Image (tube, rainbow, N blue to C red; front, side, top):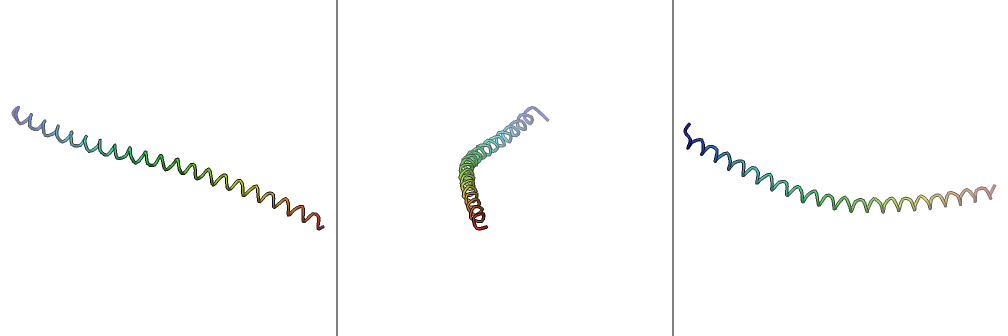
Length: 78
């Protein structure tokens, strides 16, 4: 293998590596956008879960109030 063949082979390998790197860079940029989108969705979910937890706590409080009221009414009827 002479020097010209070696240079051509190295050039081909360099071009292939450059293309691979460009594809990887494009993939990484796409993944960054997806991660940003997921992070925004998680922020919305955190808010939603917080609202559900708050609503559940309110319902629990109402259920406890009704339970105490029923217990008082049952104690009076005895």
